Length: 94
Image (cartoon, rainbow, N blue to C red; front, side, top):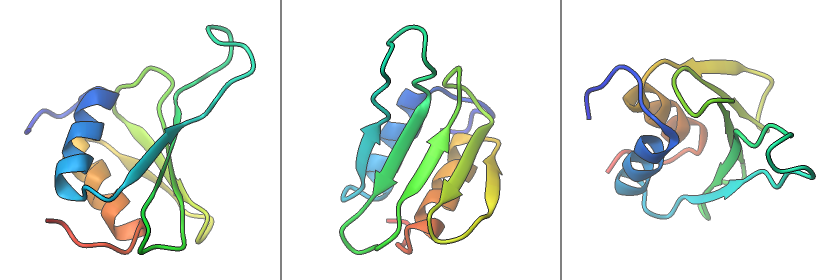
């Protein structure tokens, strides 16, 4: 996948291929349709940290944060976002 911008679907399929052990959960909102549900949590058994990726419209750029520190990173493509995700989850690209 070499597109500069992609949807959540592209991110999920790419991250699942790169690191199949990643667990993905979407924020459960109180008011579907009214609340922003563009927040997803990523974790994996070998990492004590959780990563959250946010995009209100499901398109790049993605805001990436972790509970390990206060850094706010921006993934401008699916590839860059997956690289950030694997680094923050302390795993290696497959």
